[in-house]
Length: 280
Ligand SMILES: [Fe+2]
Ligand SMILES: [Fe+2]
Image 1 (cartoon, protein in one colour):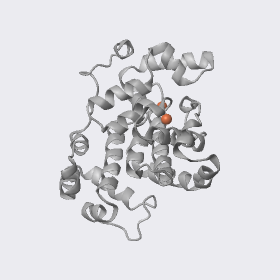
Image 2 (cartoon, rainbow, N blue to C red):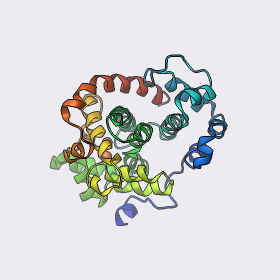
Image 3 (cartoon, helix red, strand yellow):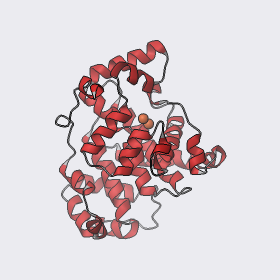
Image 4 (cartoon, rainbow, N blue to C red):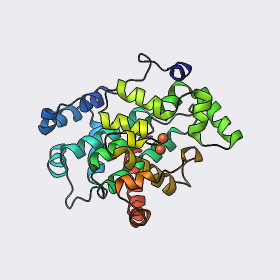
């Protein structure tokens, strides 16, 4: 793809994920059911373990009694929830804030945590699995993180173009780079062998979500907009995109219903953000 070449992104040059995260992603279904395997991998990283326990014990998961070990957390929350927390913390830690980025990496992650939280809360109103929604929300803009890391100067050109032409970031990316962060993200996600539903969200969270096999991209599209709205004063306007109401139809959701959850989503973004972004 010409856009990828322009950004100096190739199969060989994409940043790799930390081993523990790659191992967690690659857990087979059989291993997932045996939570000792997940715990064994997580224990290799004490910092990550501490973060996982902190989030598990936060009001986001609403546990009656606090858990003090990964084993307990796994029993109470379930292996899929624990896996989604570990992936979120591990991937955010691996791409820390940098003064050398065109767009604030912290802002991208803050927006991504917001999307993950909104997606998890709203998933409960749909047929989408909440833990999968959380991971997908967190990773939906991973393409921006990669472009920032690999081609900062080119992303600065995109921002300049956006300013001068008063257009959406996605359109500026198409003109300047010949590729969008959604396409770059999908390329990287496939190389990392992320599960297919997550790759699909990364590609289709702005448009064409009906092309995806599941309703997950439509849910992330809605969660993306909710996150933009709630964090409007914190993150830059480079996160703002047009909203396609087709997503609501696909999910059988309406604005009024979503409105009832905004307060709780806002509070949970604060809680999870302070733990997941603690190392930034
Ligand atoms: Fe995006
Ligand atoms: Fe986004």
